[in-house]
Length: 114
Image (tube, rainbow, N blue to C red; front, top):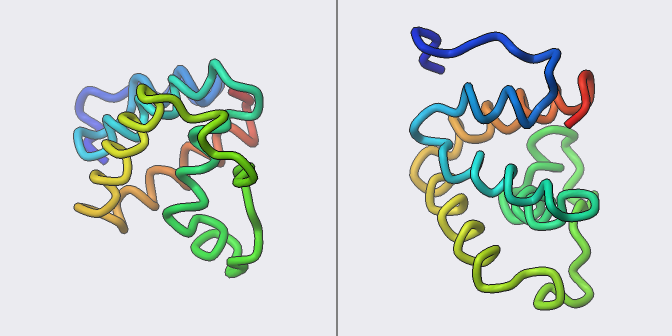
């Protein structure tokens, strides 16, 4: 991660940290995370975690499901689908880097809240 212009505002929560510390290759992921803050349990971002195999990467368990997949269309409108597509595109271009950043983001969320 480029630390030249980044701040260490972890204690302010994951949203604040992500908005200040998203590298250029994670800007769409940060946008999706920020947008998902409007939803109970960050539903669009949790679907992103499922699609990139986060549970398998982080826990070695691909049976963990973060998003509600019963009726995806009920929680994903055209804006959410666009943000999700952009985030998945970033992941496809740099999966290891995006994985690393997402893991750090979720660690901060776990320790300091959203």
